[in-house]
Image 1 (cartoon, rainbow, N blue to C red):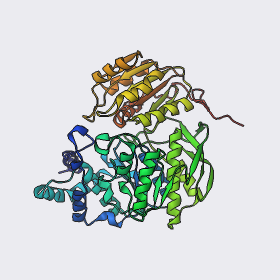
Image 2: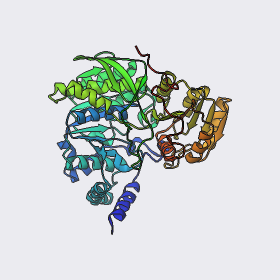
Image 3: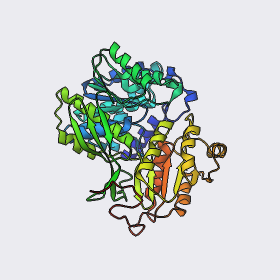
Image 4: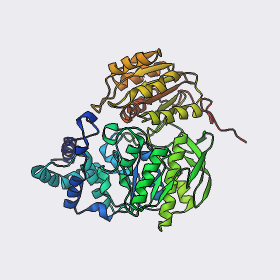
Length: 489
């Protein structure tokens, strides 16, 4: 059997497992989340997670961005840095990266080959591990096999019962608390905070970016019980976000999407100042749009400074370099500037609010168009109530690669009830893009949002459109006038 056939068999095996990313939360319960299976599986694999220096990152939003920033800084400091993240954009291997390089197909196949007999034995003995439990074990094994110096571990869902919570970290990070996954985590912010704070271990320091008072109180109480030192945003460290602006890059940035270069010739920065218990930083830059990314970066640097106190060798310049080299797709990602095309993974009311603030402060278009799709059990009404008034035209669609997509007919009915905004229904993301681009002028803005999955699929179809992304289409000036640019002195 050739290597590609082995790879496809490995994929089929993994995707045959119970996958809570692809089933409705009405089909799940807390009984589906437990750590016993995870401990059992890792024990059979030789407990590779116990060999690693881990930074554990949880949060309702911002955890992926913060984890990516921490990993980029550690890599800049010379550490061979592993990052476990979810979900993936296009390939499962993206979840297991070392120094920003995803695992290869051969490595993925080898990991499944090694793990599969243990999973099948567990199936015979009782209830075997789920998709996410297996991918978590694969990450630990891959990072151990490849001698990672540091592992940044992003929580999948919640914290207390998440499969990553078998680790013994050197630092725990909680980025934010907002309402999401309420069936599993509860509807009150303090209840959600308690689940997220389940990653707090006795005596292990904690960095928190949580600002909601009841949620802060819940986290503080758990840290006190577990004698874990706690440093909090707006108490032990604080940031000031500067006016957004753009810089011309010396060369095209690359993105991982079928090995094709990105067509965008601009890098967009959020600049901010930061005061911590150790340093006063000015002019920090992260190549992501939005004040919420400054908050995420503040939490990331607070985490790094805590590691410095624990004898990690990281210089100030390495922190700046790592932050500036962070690459995170579909976080208010600008694919083109004339017209402005933004794809964003926002999927709850808090992240949509952050997105709309970013659009207000960073762009000044003549007309705004929205492509929207959503996932079942999300509070779609609140998201649409924030989005619909600001867009002159809306295209409703549904993603194809996950069965949890909300049917486009349901989105249409909801949109009719909430607003008189003009909207069009497209049943496939490719058709949504083909329809949207016909009405785009060079000074317009198109935003794709509502779900990680629609952002990923639309990004694929947009970047694949080579006719649209030609050098002769809407040449980009040094400071494009569609963007609000920082005043030059």
